[in-house]
Amino acid sequence: MQALGVNYEERRTGRALGVDYGQKRIGLALSDASGLLARPWKVIARSGNASQVAGALAAEVAALEASDGAVTVVVIGYPRRLSGEANEQTRSVQKVSDRLKELLPIAVVLQDERLSSHEAEELLARSERDWRKRKQQLDAMSAAVILQDYLDTAGARRAGSRFEDEDT
Image (cartoon, rainbow, N blue to C red; front, side):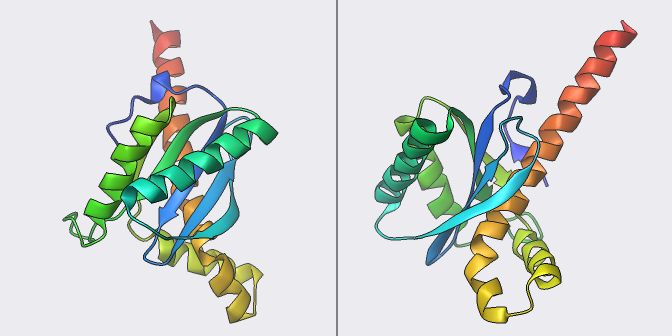
């Protein structure tokens, strides 16, 4: 998976918010302050149009900044078919992303989310036997998978650029 149109070298270290935008619910995940590890945070109900959803997400970012410190990037799962083609959800996510970029003074990036729900289900199945509890946690865990993919890719690119600097 990869983030679309991201300059990883410009990303500041800090907390990141991961978003799994679903039909009924929106899963949220947070990184640690170092920007290395993602964890599921919470699930919010999805209601309203793209502008209203973006407003709700911007409010979550503002609340986080007031209580936990700066959020430096919002990473939104970008839905695609396995073939890479857009699906019915892709356009909705793009609208939310575009509106969020207007509302927030921080980076908003799209991260390929193919197979993230499947990976989240597998992770939850290992730690939670009760399927009802797994279902409640799935969206936030999917957001954590999306965010961790982004953080891993960003970390690898930063490490690669450090090695290139040392070679010169």
